[in-house]
Length: 537
Image 1 (tube, rainbow, N blue to C red):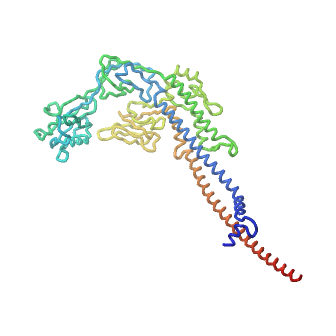
Image 2 (spheres, rainbow, N blue to C red):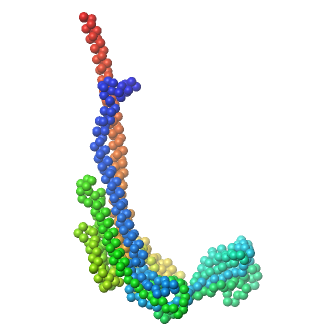
Image 3 (cartoon, one colour):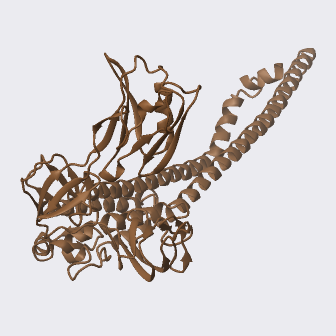
């Protein structure tokens, strides 16, 4: 204990041993500390910048997709009497020449029935079997001791899956059963009980020959509209197969009132949209340029030389020349409407060229933004594609429609599709994954074309870069592995530095003991010499 205290105080040598050892140890480890810290800082900057760049292209793609999906960049229908109906363009529609007249003669309605009033929803209704017949088929509603109540009957009807909704309406007079089907004349329904039923369940029967049963509050009926004088019936008040490319929602019937449908082109919106696109693109390129700029050490960008970012720049640079649509003879790329690539990789917009194209080829300009899909034949109807399927052209062969209980069958690009009733679903592993079509008739071959437009093209670039096996993922894994290596190196270096410190401290402590011993010997000799000198005197 005394020797260690002496060593710490430097009694023997007069030096602060611990301070000296710490200074020597710090001096020895300082270069390695600086090297590790520099590597750690650079790695953290690379990870942060990669996340920033990845987030920037994600935000760019999302903002563009939202702008396009909002419908402001393509022609929308106009309605002269918006209180009677509303109209909007169906995705992929081309409405440049839309001109039609509509008359809403009658709205579609759902059949509704009501029962007599019961004192409470728990009152018994009678036991037996009530047969509900709807457009979905015939369904037996069984009422026994377990569910013999107005509430039990309601639950049993809802559970049958007949397409008829049951509910209980309660007011000051009591509780009533209310039944409601889907809109349209074909969705009318009836209820019947076996002849001679006197349990009370007969009070819920309804049909042409039924007396004393449910009361019809509203009859089922079709919507009736006239398109340019031609009468058309639809089972719903919402439909998209009367005026091509237009989704119509009826609000009110007013026979004799003619509603004009037209179209308005978003010329100003497209110009502003392209201006915003170029500005956002250039902001992204500025961020990338700063992250990848050449230089030594801190003067260079954190991601200079990164393969993933180089690939991102290359793919973004191809956007102006990329064919976004194959329709018509007008412009098929951004370059053809005035979007130019500058020498530094940024974009500029020739607004005069854009206006010229909007005047001469408005439909083609809209097509650059508006996703579209179509089949070469009416043998199939596309049910799901845009936004789910990679843009391109796909060939369906050996198409056979549903026959009895045998589902539809066919192939896509040589791969067997999965038949689900009248539909075909592209299999896993197919380039057309996500494609669903309805087979209307047999056909040896049908071509499906899917065009994503500008928003889809940017989304494809983003998704390819951010794919779990894509370049961004590879860079992120490399940087994460390097971060772990740095942490391991730091731990090893810390251990070595501590070992070196303890070794130095031990060496200097031993030296301090030797110095103390030498001083003790010197003191003894000094005393002896003095004694010898005094004796002689």
